[in-house]
Image 1 (tube, rainbow, N blue to C red):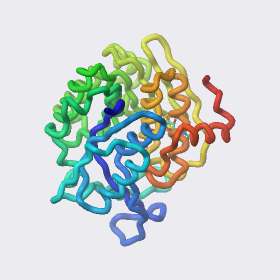
Image 2 (cartoon, rainbow, N blue to C red; image 1 turned 30 degrees about the horizontal axis):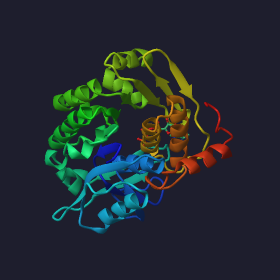
Image 3 (cartoon, rainbow, N blue to C red; image 1 turned 90 degrees about the horizontal axis):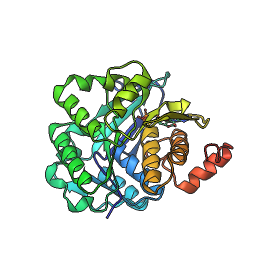
Image 4 (cartoon, rainbow, N blue to C red; image 1 turned 90 degrees about the vertical axis):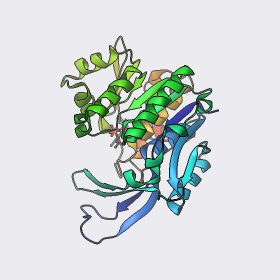
Length: 318
Ligand code: ATP
């Protein structure tokens, strides 16, 4: 029985060694690193004290084993990770630009992760589930959308809450099917975790408060707007508050949002207040960007407390 469940892609990341390195020129790369937004989320949620499982597919290869071993070491329930013999584990190649932008090459759609389907999820998996986390980036084909929708019904049947991190590009909403999928998820969401830009293009509204109001009208409990190095703002039906960021030197921004979300949902699952959950989530996001590699920046509560103490901020919001 797992309290937090996620369904989605497990990948490895292979990163360019140098800034401004190009994909169309031969160069040196570092990795493989365990990755995939859902995998990072669930690793972080587990490390901060919740019982968690991921439903995923990897190839019968070293990249898959690297991920399974990492997740297992960190305490994630890996029994729902299947190995697909005829496919490889998904790979994300990434290179960084001087201005902080990232460029990716993904093999996701041809990988084992793209074989996840409705038959992979069952009622039994959701028994005792308290939070089902959805990552918009996992809805990368029709079958994944159908699988996630099925999971929403199974989770709701257990009275689980739905948390939704859109993690999508604006262009995807030009597809009517995808747009309808996002509308369906939002109607069922309890905790919504967009970035500032995502909130604007998902609602079609430029003004943040108006955009949030539109979302809250659908019975969403919390809208947590992530603002990168500026921290985050939390809205509920009545009001909002800001949670200040922790000042860090950014080494690698990948995974910050997933570590933030994993911590937030894990602490809400454990009955902590939204203020406390967000304080730790901010710390987890900040800590994540200080480590090279997408999943290398996940941290336990003890590690986060030590990090906050080092920044003089442990009791800031408590
Ligand atoms: P990504 O998709 O890159 O994983 P995201 O866009 O979903 O991230 P961000 O807003 O970049 O989410 O980061 C999530 C949270 O992590 C922020 O709200 C903030 O609390 C923390 N964070 C991110 N970057 C920094 C930073 N450079 N310094 C301090 N805190 C940061």
